[in-house]
Image (cartoon, rainbow, N blue to C red; front, top):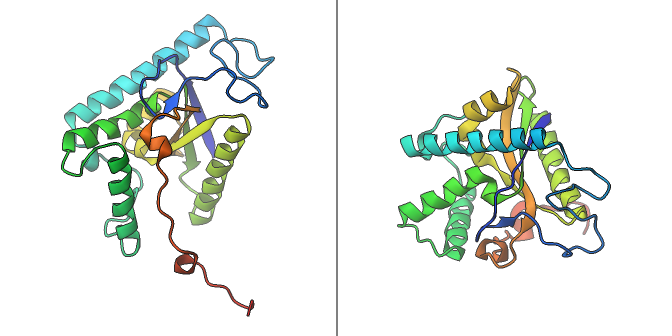
Length: 225
């Protein structure tokens, strides 16, 4: 397992993640543009430019690819969902999409609005840092499960520093662009992206909570009678 990292000085506007909010998390190490956590010196200007340029190139290439192709039909190395998603998962997935886009004020019939929201994924929703997480393609289902735990741990660690995250499987549709820009070794497969920043509490998507299945729908207890 491995991950690549981008840093950007993009200014957030009305999106789920914002670059920073000074003083918001008093009990955690503070982050700002000039320094990382306290005591970490600013990177060299040349490295900053390199990161910014690479991030811009990746974003521009992703945008250009989306302009030419329907994102739903773009090639991936593994399916985000099974081709014929069975119940109850199909209904749950449909409900999640309906409620999420409803919170954003975008109807199911608003193809333009829905596509615009999808495209924001490829700017990491304006987060200042984006991760690309890969896995060795020679590994199997057990290691994929391990990777899920790894990603969850990253999210928890970020919260420990007052940061928010947004895992994004949609990046698998740009695996060729990302792999070429980051020079992935041939055995490494792009598994997902993850934006890291400070959530915008005023954005509707950050006040949306997805529904939860009842405990008896997914869990059975034995020996507790």
